[in-house]
Length: 259
Ligand SMILES: Nc1ncnc2c1ncn2[C@@H]1O[C@H](COP(=O)(O)OP(=O)(O)O)[C@@H](O)[C@H]1O
Ligand SMILES: [Mg+2]
Image (tube, rainbow, N blue to C red; front, side, top):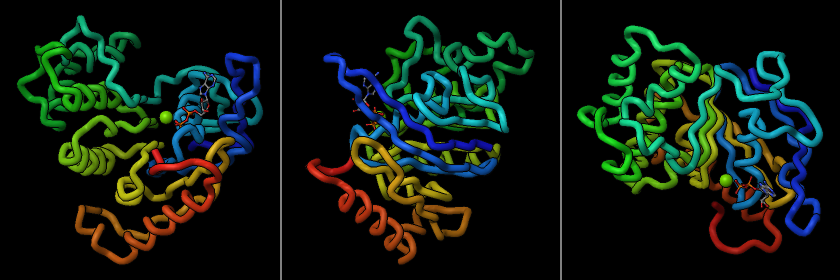
């Protein structure tokens, strides 16, 4: 579904220096696979997502989606950014419907669909509210609905639960698994939480500190459907521990927890 081949991205810093954000990144992601990207802060995770989204061009290498090079944002891709980015002047329902309006794909049942999605993430009754009337977590859930409204085949999520409190975060990750099971799609999910990556993913791509390279692609050996019960299993803990070692082992001069 997504073929990333020897991808590198070099930015120019303010003082004219080259910043190698991503180096020699290759992976093939199968249709309906759930893949996470973890690694230290600044290792190029968001850059990778923006590249796959077609928001920025690669410096070297190619990204093919269903065999076609990505050159611009595609309609079949939904994106959730780390901060909710809702339109402040539009209601929650209108925010969710925004992609359909942009693509001139509004249908008679679109509003019902938006309301159903909002219900799914616990926002029933908030359809006519404005973003400022919602908490950060609620706004993020609305942003997730917005990314799902046109039922995209690919969902790119950049630390989507990063701003949520721990409880909402756990609830949302199970919610995401349920949505993914009901409406299968290829998901590339950036997170700084190793347990979250292991809980959700088929495979976890572990990146090194800058310049971001793939250290290892870890298969998650857990059966589906999954619930929090899997966290107690030894396979879960071994897998998380393995990833933790890869990240801390691969780091040179960074301190603190990976993010
Ligand atoms: N537009 C840009 N211009 C210059 N440098 C950038 C730009 N975007 C990202 N970078 C740099 O690329 C590196 C990777 O950034 P990013 O992908 O945001 O990392 P992560 O999401 O893993 O924290 C960082 O060093 C960052 O400063
Ligand atoms: Mg980032």
